[in-house]
Length: 464
Ligand code: UD1
Ligand code: CA
Image 1 (cartoon, rainbow, N blue to C red):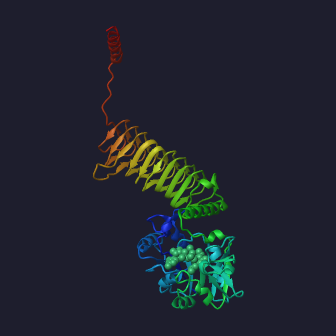
Image 2: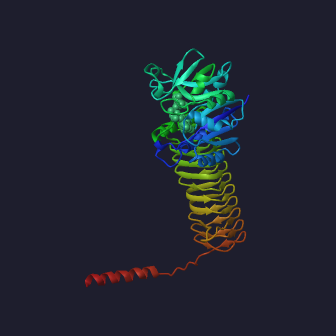
């Protein structure tokens, strides 16, 4: 038995007051609709059909294809927003599967645990659906039961006072044979209070129905406003924190940590307050990250320690590395084992080999740095000449004295030594000592003579 998913994601979401289509707003750094696609994948749906509107469709498609390059995704355009039934009708032709599962691009908190209950519930009936009991069911479709397995959904606007008193509501998630859904959408009528084609008609049409109540009503939260988005984001974040805590991760102040679903954390890891994860992040065993720090699309090897106030992005960090406080890694930074990157050091598109150190105030851009090198405070690779970027190559065991500027392209041979304050414009051979600055001259007694002249001039000025 195969199951295809239809995800309804048409509409701008005007109440978000944003030019970004509603389903592309992020919760935990991933677009709302991406959470739903990931869930559909998780429960084994293929294909996954996303119903979009003509205005935002391309943008939604581009985003999802970028995030799920290997997933069987199809996009269907609903020309006009004529109701949930019409939306499903727009996409159903693409569902080549035995059964169909309906989901919503703006309802991202549903869990696999809940959805997995639908399949066994379908045993012996024509339709399985999610319901919830709400203290205040206002606005939702109500479940009106004729018997245990025969029922229909009445939308709030169409409901009688008696029906409005029902607290069992429709979540909108259905699993049924494709045939039943095809027959339903083929015969929909918009003869209701809203003049819409209601997908809920599928429930009355099914000969028998079994309901599954969501364990937690938060799962059915949809998003229409920035306030609702922030609430959903917070719930999602708490869930992610809990998942990692269950695997032994220690968060010193969980409420202040920002997580995304694409984070993998090893054993005995400690995360300080205010650490923010974005994109895909991997932390090896025994890593310590002091907060506040930003980690974006980065992998960090075991036993590495990151001090506070670091901004680390699109980089690869080896094992037992020390970073920060106040360090910055930019795209293409690769640090091997035992490297030290200290305060106010920026590394971009550079490889730093085992055991090398840049502990203070440096810019290492477009550089290849060998093993065991020492990069002095204030070292700058001048990688950009105003037109093009050039590389700096620093061999194993090189010592670069403080406040040196290395004008790329340039190579410092193995075990060479650059005197402090040098401007290096030519390659330095291995084992050489390079000076790139004016030779120092000391004039005996000149300072004393200068002071005496100044004192005389001051005394004279006072008299006059
Ligand atoms: C729907 C259900 C209701 C249920 C509630 C749960 C129907 C008729 N009613 O009502 O029983 O209690 O969900 O939240 O299905 N959409 C489209 N195209 C459209 C219309 C809607 O893509 O033409 C998408 C929307 O983007 C939205 C979703 O479908 O994400 C739900 O549509 P909405 O009109 O909000 O349905 P509800 O009134 O919430
Ligand atoms: Ca809704």
